[in-house]
Image (tube, rainbow over all chains, first blue to last red; front, side, top):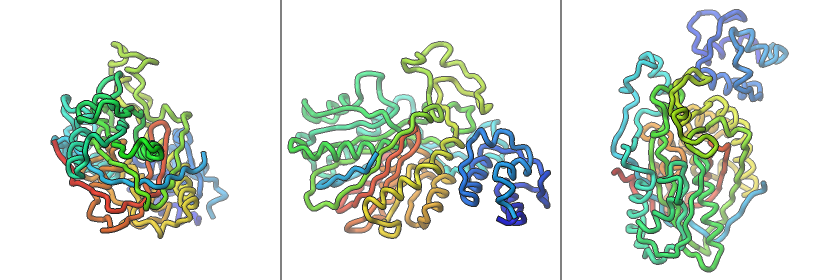
Length: 73
Length: 352
């Protein structure tokens, strides 16, 4: 997935209101956005993440770490 | 486990009953949600209204009404019913089995085979497969399958993860022999390593009811509940669903030499709208092929598949309709089934 598409998609998935999303954008997962992130990662990266994997997600760069930066161009 | 195959059996009729009392989720008076949060949650889970039982109505009462109506409308002589199976996690008593009580209450003859199955979301598929198995016996010609739950009674009102989700319902399905019926394919599975993802810990024999089990405390997810309330780790259940259900359904279709296109309708356990929509998208099932009953009834646990079939009666074809049923959740336990409904009597939802 292209990094630019990832930022635009993840902004929608996480319902982030800030106009620009980058690696440092803070992330606060709720029960609803947790499901949305799991679905997003499953659909685009064919990876099933566990709840425990999402416990320490505080910003977008943490999510990129989970997905694997090599999967973003 | 490999796939099960049943021949010479059919569903003769299905009915469902819900309590008259409803809760509109938009009116859910709680300081737990901001107005915006409430709206977003409702839209995501897709539950706008739920039917909930007052304390005096048990699951067996809902199933009793559904069964009485079904037997009457199908003109079934009660003497001819050989077996009654009750599938629920909200029985009348810890003992005896509710099926025995219902055998008597429904006026089925003494000596009728009767027992309970303790399963939730997957329970309808398990119950049907049990009924089909019995019908292979010459001594058994009609089985009454009663499936339902009053899960709303188990929810902590202060638990944001489940207080808008659960509704109550009971169902009745009559299954009988039919030598011209198409084969039924079925897959049944479990993974108890996920038992704690959806659990009521207190009130059984591992953790008997006590002052401790009814004390409301803050859980790992910051929600307030007691050990006798339902605990649900939604994301973990979602994760399990993504991992197991698509491949379970694809395996079932392969076993039956069928494709998604060959199936007229898919009836999923109504976990929540987000989850069911995602599952359907992953399996490339178009929206018109998977009816939802969540908006009016919520997640009705074991009753959700038969209730959704009854609710979607107008989508069934006049003759044969090919269905896939898929139930998944508490256990963890899951099951899927491919079968045809042929001249099956579907009754309108009953309210008591």
